[in-house]
Length: 258
Image (cartoon, rainbow, N blue to C red; front, side):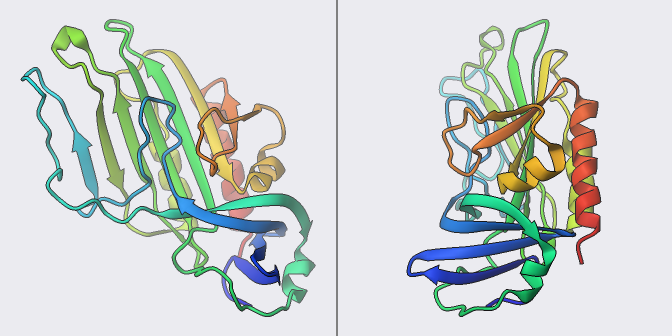
């Protein structure tokens, strides 16, 4: 049994890891089904691994030259992708369940390496002059020791009028932060892309989903169109301010955590 941090785990039966996640006065009881490579919840033609660039920044820019040009750390080895847990059978229980839980720890996951909760925001929009589509995503994994990082992805559709057929994208990572600092950073970074000035929409993903449902409620909750299994649900918001308000609600919940 792991007694320190935000999570406790025990092997309920061979191959099934029962998990208790404590967030303030709320405890989420779930089953840790598997661990899979993380991806940004982008809804475009390719996936983007949830990774920490070795120098904190990575980009891909295409120009008008044949074949385009790449800039950034394209010559470096790809950094290690952050693996995320897939939870099933989530429900909310009393915090006393967490305090009293006791069992054998054999066969449990390495809690130091795998985030126990993940929050992501996404802003999508369109440039009124060129019609170019753009998406800005911020993903905040939270580890068992109460630390977090914020990973940002900006994606821009290619503009044939400027000789760019393929999209451009940028990934940037923050340093390790406390959960409180991470949520503030997530709020600061959750903006529409700079060129988007029409048809903007906003959404948030929370894993485990039971945390999002408990804090944000059922309003605006929808199945996610991303095929990746770590993002089964999303919450849609009419305005950016409403999405930022949802981050504040999550901050209030985490502020009660030890």
